[in-house]
Length: 474
Image (cartoon, rainbow, N blue to C red; front, side, top):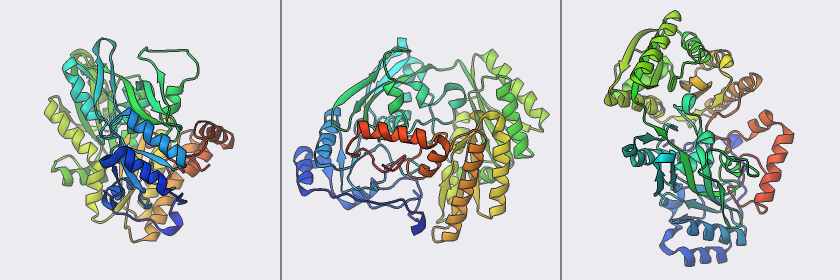
């Protein structure tokens, strides 16, 4: 995990609320050993992978059932105490930080797979189940859940942040793959949204409202997900390019031609070097696309040949194929470890991650200018991207003791987001708003849309106890 750092002028607004003794006593009486006020436990639940350092919550409640969540929220509502849902702590934008104090509500013990409906291609799980555990539970049915943000995140957290990842170019994001939810509201009431049916026109789409709400409108206690048949054939390939532009132009051409590629990841030469050192690989240290194809043996072969021909037109070379599960796992594990490889490349550093997404036709314009700015800054960085859907990430590796580096990295991030918005993109393709993107949300959505979001927040959470201080101030 990153070491804590944050120059004073870049800290979020911290406005702790009083936590009444009567509330703490009621919490201890209801939850006993499931409630901890130990400093080490509170500190663990008061940090994520963001750049912010915030005082820990006053207590941590380990929920083991929907009733536990409902009772904890009801007590918090009675005493006007903030509640911050916690999954595995892998968020990147400060989602779980207790900027207004309160308690952390840890749902990691709610980790059961409740029902697998193989005939309907659905699975219902508790929020603490991780994505790898879901796939382990359904693989015997010949099924899989494709959303893959890299970290073994909890399904509840992935739903709350509208996560996506490497498979999004073909299978979509959590928005497209969550069918129904059980949610505890700000008053402690348990409601259900959606059904296992593929579609519905019944009233407001409350499921979509909760997906991506980052714990500010309700606490998710159950999720019903879409599943997909395991593909008959899977093939992965890597291809090196002389320039980033050549790699990006290849991706644009592949998508515009309608090739149903399952994964398409860009890794720049800096990052390939870091990954080689970290994962003991011998990849060519050039800009690289890492791709995967799903389907029948014939369709996979056709897709791969088409992409190879397109890559050749842009100077792509050194195609290497990985057809066995072990070879594919080795490549994708290296990709998912890029963040940790980068952190280790500069001991003691801290990473400021970016997360923009643009229409695929504008990808080259956005990415190439951002690379030029990063190169000119002198700050070490890594670059990876789910470029098949126009999403990419820089990680600026800064010295935690250098306010100047922090400032320059934040300026690079600011310029990148402004560029993405000018190109009709978004300030966050998958990480969510949290604390880090609050100012950018107003730039992207406009005052009227943010005002509407505030109206929804006030209506559903009138005392502002659910993860307050995230997405926007209220």
